Structure formats: C-alpha cells, structure tokens
Image (tube, rainbow, N blue to C red; front, side, top):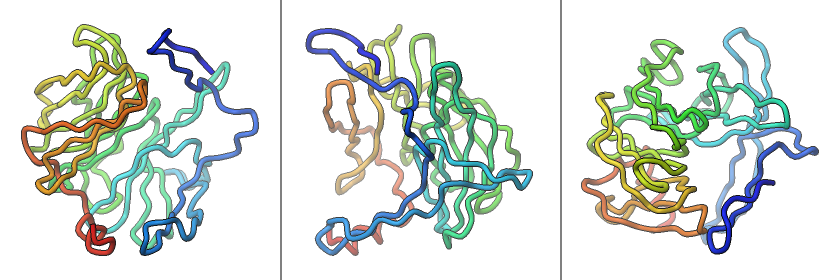
Length: 253
C-alpha cells in the first residue's frame, strides 16, 4: 500500500498485486425485484487470444455493451514489485459463450466506450495517459487491432474511466496534477482534433463519469481521493447506453 498526501488529503492506495491473488473474472450479478443481489455467477476467468491461445484475465476493469448485446471490456492488469501485466481489450458475444482478446498489447487499458453510432471504440490507457480509437466493422470485430492515437494527456496526468456524450465527445476521468489543475474531466473531440475543454474537480483521483437524470444532462463524477460522488450539469445530454431503456422498465426507476 502507498500513502499519498497528508492531513485532510491523506489517502492510502494499493500498489502491487496481493500475494494470494489468483485471477480476474467476468461475473453476472442478478438482481431481484427489490434490486437486491439474488445470484452471482462467473462467466469467464480466461479468454482466447488471436493465436488461439488461452490467456488468463488479470484485472478486468471497464466494459461497454454494443447494440447486438455483446460487450467490450478492458483488462487493466496487475502490478508486482518488479513487473506489470501487458494486457488488452476483450469481446464477449451476446450469448455469453465466447471471450476473445481483440486488442493486444496495451499498457494499463482502463476506460472504454463506443461512439453514439457504434462505429468507433475508444480505449484509454492509465499510465500513459493516451486515448485510442478503433473502427468497428461488426460486433466484436475491428478494422485493425492497431488503434489510432487521438489524444495524449499532458505531463502530470493519467486517464481512468470514460463516457461519451451525445455530441460524440469522449469525456475521460483524469487523474493527477499539472498545468490544468488537480484532477478533472478531459473532454476530447471525437474527430481527434484535440481537447474541447478540461473541467477541474480539485480531486487528484477523479476516477469515473456517467450521465443520468431525466434529460441525461446530469454528469455524475466519482472523486476517489475524497470519497465523494458529485453531480454537475453538462452542456449537452450524455449518450444513452444500449439497453438502458430495458433496465429502467424492469426496475420501474
């Protein structure tokens, strides 16, 4: 564990893989009508790479569903005293029958999302602060496994999770401290022409963002350094996730 900061900003975070850690997994949590957990089942603890080899999941992180019902997810990997996992992006088909590694190698892949029309896949690397775009040609298939680098964070910043708004901007939770201030959301133009703006939160560990509210114009942001969930109005609605309507209709939310 690593202690960061002091006084009110003191935070302790894990730095290396636990000695008894075995593997990462993709699990399904089934909820009852009262939104309490009724059953947890494990779908995958490993996937198949492009050469047909079996690879263990190290540390699955973020995921996003496409219109077919399949989903993409990043494997962030784990760190050890003298080494770190090199991992990638996987795809699980709509029946939950296969888990394939589609992109490899990546350095600490974390945030993942799809463009509003589903034609582009976005992946953020944490340690490098880089954002890549991939052209999607069909469910689980990319034009090429080599991504197009569309943005790199400036010195002092790293990337975490992301969301996409209805204008196609990629909104990436940004860790660190630099010329823009301490922590925030990097709003990156979908065409890769640069930064639209940076919204400072003041929290070094700004880790996630999603959109909600009746008009989808409320941005919810997690501030892990101070243990807060904050809300702010966005300049446009967020992009509605696939199957979101089904979730609301079943839970009557």
